[in-house]
Length: 255
Image (cartoon, rainbow, N blue to C red; front, side, top):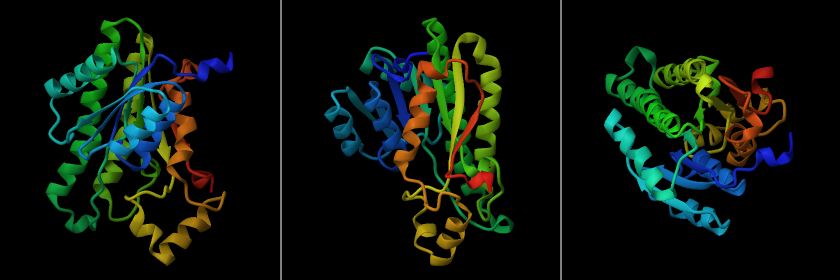
C-alpha cells in the first residue's frame, strides 16, 4: 500500500463539536491531509475555519446545537454538508458534554442531556450519513469519539461513562451491519487530554499528579495527538479496519 493511501485529497468531512479543543484539532488534521471540512458547533468556529482555509482547503461552518436531535434534522444536516461541499465521505462525531455529580444524587436532567448528545445525536447522524453513503454507492468513513471511560468506570460521571461505553458498543454494532456496505465505522478513545473539559483536573495538583503517575509517557495528551489516528481511520489506509476502539492515551490502559 502506498503512503498516498493516507491522503484525503478530494474527500469531504463533517466534524461535530469543532469550535475548539479536540474537535478543532481533528478538523484541522483532516484538512492537513487534504480534506474539505464542515465544522459544526453551537459556538462560532471562526478560528478553526481560518486554520482550514489557510491550508488551501474549503471550510464551512454550521452553528447549531445537537441537543434534541431527530432523524429529519440529522438528514438535513447531512444534506447541508453535501450542498456546501458537493459531497460527504467522512463523519467525525466529536461533540460532547459532561456533567459531574455523585451517582446517589445524579440529576435526571443531567443524565438525559449527556445521553442525548453522546448517544442519540451520534446514532442519528451516523444513520443519516450512512444512508447518504449507501445512496451514492461509494462507501464512507465514520469516526466516533469514545473515551477512557469506554473501558473504565470513573467517579461522579455516571452518565458520561454510560454514554461513552455506549459509543463503544454502538461503533461495533454499526460496523457489523455496515462493513458489507463499504462503510468503515470505528472510534478513537482519547486519553487524558488538555482541553477545556479537563481544566479542573489539570488545575488540581493532587489529581493532576495522580493522573501523570499512571501515564507511561509522562505527560497529558494534546489535541494534536489525535490527528494521526483520525487521518488513518478517515483514509483508504484503514479500508480493512472495522469496529475498533483505538486508544490514544500515552499508554494509560497498558498500565
